Length: 445
Ligand code: FUB
Image 1 (cartoon, helix red, strand yellow):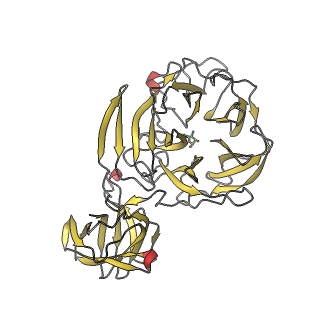
Image 2 (cartoon, helix red, strand yellow):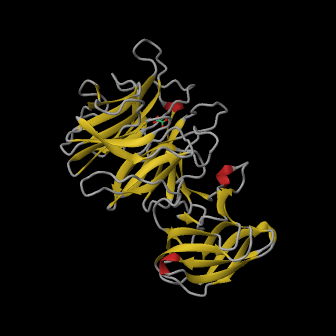
Image 3 (cartoon, helix red, strand yellow):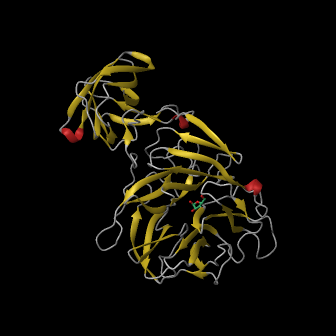
């Protein structure tokens, strides 16, 4: 999978707008590291406010600023550019690269962006991680940071919530614990003393995210039961609890990424979990990438565990480059994925089919109204090979047989379709020789 082409659309208050073309899968953003995704629906679009990991040559987090990304179809993400930077917040020590997990909420037409960072004020009681607010008239800025952090709040991972009665709350983490308080109407100050949220499991907790559904208040949070974080939740009848623990939303990463951090929203009738993993940096888990997967509730309101996928959410337009390495399923033998270029992982991944019969499946490809007549497969193969493209949900119907030429360079092979599909289908690619054949992407025309 090659790096997505980035197209500049316009300028707004110094922030460039970009389209991140063709990203329908996990991770969502492929041209930079992103972590701690706080997703919100504003005006019929999903906005994701992640933090922004960089590689600064240290073995710790290096986070200097925030971008916001938005999408209407959860497939095409617009990067609205930098909305807040450590360089433009008066109270932040801009040498500390400590702009950790943020969140944003709308109230009365204003957007309040909450973010933690290390304060430049080193006096007792005011030093360390504080939480600030930046305010905007739109979800994408310009955000004007308040000159001081929120008084009386010390910690990280702010999460604002507005209840049905209009009362706003702020949750945050500190000293391995979670805290909450009511916010004043101005959204800039606490209206009550910070309270520790009790009756949660012992051990390290951070990243609180609270939402309400059918009268149940879900307090969700990463917790370390053993060595790395998993996403858990507790439920209560009130925004400030008491809460009772209710289960696990996502298990620890099998690959060992120490952190996870999430948010949960309903969008157009479907619930989604936004979270992160270190897909683009498997050797260094402080360079993370945001993801999204669908989330489902049981009848009794409990949350079904979310199994992380590469395929992610949203439909993939058959006329765009389909990155099949973000697969839904992979045959047990002879199929694998790898980075296209280990020296530049932002170029993404490729699929390698090794033996006859090796296969990979990519779900939810939208063929539209049946006017696609041919297919392009970008592939490389030292021996050449034949692959068939089949529709899994139509009993394996073969729609094309593609001859991949013997070549040492990536080559685009064009083939007419033997059957013209319409609508949404699950695409399977099967190798019919002994390979290997490596595939970057597939596009229908
Ligand atoms: O991104 C820095 C920190 O790592 C966040 O604030 C935590 O929630 C964890 O994801």
